[in-house]
Structures are given as C-alpha cells and as structure tokens.
Length: 504
Image (cartoon, rainbow, N blue to C red):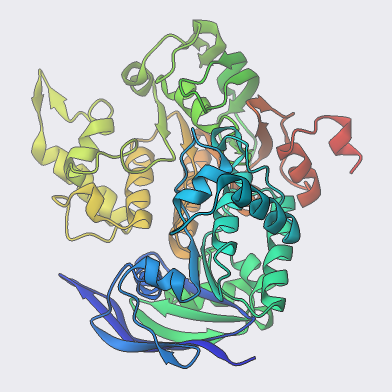
C-alpha cells in the first residue's frame, strides 16, 4: 500500500509560541501511525490542521497524491478524514441514532440509519443498540458511538485522540481488534496516546514531536516505552520511587456510604466501605461513569451525608462542607480541570487562593493577602514545572497538562492529612505524569493518606499499596496491589467480586 497523507513543512504560530515548526512526515495506507510528544509539543495543533480546524501558516499537505487543504472539518470528512476526539460530543438525552444523525451532513431516515448503525457496529465488533439513550451507556459504549459515527463516513484516515483512557483492559482488546480490521481494509489510523505500552502493542510507526518540532521516528515494537518517553522529553526519565515502610493508623474511614447522584445520568453510590491509613496509597480503578465523581464529591463535602458514614481521625465529618474539611486536612482534586478544579477566567494567583486560603493563611480578618497568595502560586509553578508566563495568567490559557500540574501542585503543597485525587495524570505527558506520581508517593512517605481514583491501570499498579474497583456505584473488595493480574483487575472493574476474581 502507498502513501495516504503527506505533510511537508507544516508550521503554525500563535502569539508568543510556535505550536508547529516545519513538521514533515508521511502516513501510509493500512498503518497505525502514533503521534507522540509531551504536553505542549504540538500534537493537538497538528491534528487540527489535518482535520481542518486550524489553517497552517505555511507548508503543504497531499492526500492520495492530491493537494489537501481543508478549510473546515466538513471538507476533511468529505475527503475521507475522520476524527474521534478525547472528550465525547454526545447529547445524553438523545439516543444513539439521533446523536449520530446530528453529525451527518444528509442523514437518512432514522429507520434506515438505525439499520446501518447495527450493521456497521456488528461488522467491526462494536455492537450498539441504535435506540438506547446515550445517558444510559457506559463510557466504553459512548466511545463506540463516536467511532461508529466516523465509520459511517467510510474514512480512509481515522484520527484517534487518547482512545483507551475510558476503557477496561477487555474493551481495549476489542478496540484494537477493530482497528486491526480497519487497517487490513487499507484504512490508516493516526493514534495519539500517552500509554506507551499500548503504542508498542498496536502501532507500526511513531513520529515524535518536541516543542513543536519533529525530533525523530521509530518502530515502537523495536524500542522500549522508556526509550520513547526519553525521545519525547529529550532527557533521561526519572522513575517514581517508593519509600516503603509500614503503614500508620487509619486516617479516613467510609462505612456503608450510599449517595444519590445529583445528576440524572450520574451513578449513585451503594454501600461504599473502605479504610485508608497514614502512608498508604489506595488506588481505585473503574471505567468512567461508575461513581468516581460522586465519590470524590462525597469525600470533598460537595455532597453531604450522615456524619458517621465519613470519619476522619475518629471525627465524624459526613455533614461538614468543603471548607471545614479542608481545615481538618482533607483535600481533594477533581477530574474536571476547568470549571471544577480551577475557575477558567481567574488568574493562577486567584485559583491558588480558592483552595489554599485556609491552610496557607492567605486571608486575615476578611482581608486577602495578595503578596503571599502570589508567592504561593509562584511556588506551585516552580516546583511543578508549570509552563506559563506567570501567576497573572488565566487558568484557561494553560494547556491541559500544565493546568493539571498546577491543580495537583496546589493541593500537594498544602501538606494534607488526607488527599483524594481523581485522574491525577489525565492527558499529561510521560515526564509530567512521573513527577505527579512521585509527588503523591512523597506525600504518602510523609504520612499522608492518599486515595487515587484513576482509569489508568498502569498508574494505579505503579503507585498503589492497595487496589479496589468501582462498578455501578459499588466498590469491590480492597486487595493488595502487588501481584494483581490484568485479567483480575478487569473482572473487578466489570463487577466481579470475591472468589470469582480469585479463581481467574
């Protein structure tokens, strides 16, 4: 098979930053081509140029030997280029077929579309009921909707951005089978992921970007994940180190915690019971939408419960709000960076104040201490390598990975007694993920009890002392993380408990 898409000298600059500089490479028909790089390396801008969301300042593209310069995504789709974004664009109150129809230029009658959805989804091993309401679907099923929407366009190039971040190991296997079936038909896949072992398993070629420039290519199966990570960052990669040692007393205990989700399409918690000790990292896995957000809200105080269901250092705190819990040393970092963990239009200094005012002493008698607040923001920026011109910049001006480093750093530097984080390295590159994981391990080594809620199983196995899985609002048995197999973890995430898992 020949070259499908050729990029030559693509360059795109924004005020104060060159997002892409003279990037050139080819994508072959029928190959899975990985695009790797740190946060801010230029991956997003590059795929936006390919998909018609951004116009390059200079350079050319050719698709199947013909000049290719899409002015908008509709033109890209008409040329055979489709994209599955990291964050789904689906309406939860509509059914599968209705959502797919909204993304089509001239959708057929709903009955005919439903038949096509059923046929295509079964052909590619991603079965979907076209009449199911999207709000009732799991995260993995929602991703199927996005993929089927693309496949109905008969694409020749499919761009996928972090496609496995919401999938169980078993669902990842199904997705990879689907992608291999597509490549066997000559479809090319441009694959963006921070999961380097997945890249080694799936991809034929990898192009590496650093600071907007192409710095190398490799055949992933012939190099190690560490080699690829070091090509991305341009330096030797530090491996997180655990301090070891015995665990201390129980600092946080949940007993039969049941909470109704405030969202119609959320997942209510059902009888959650767990303990986390001083010096312990408790990892909680699960596919997105199984109660993770509700659990964090119940721990942060955004959702109140009866007092004795949440106990911290012997004190019932279920009825206390977020400020009172922070004063006691229970700090949280939610998954949604913009709008929940940080106010988009506020500066980093102001965002540092929002959660740090009590523990950092940033106010006195109703007056804000702006100099001290700015110094706190500067400390976060320096210690967590947040790439930003300064603390006066708005949170929304940061890349997702850099904002994540700021959010996690803001909580870690307050030295919590208990820290609960949801998706601590979501969308963060290898070097930044390593530094965040090391910061969490260092906190635990200092006596903090740390709960890490994550869909990244490699991350949880790397840093956790114990592991549990959320499924439909229920928590599996908590088990020692060391020695757990991928199959056992997958079954726990799928709702299997006790002896069912033990006999895998």
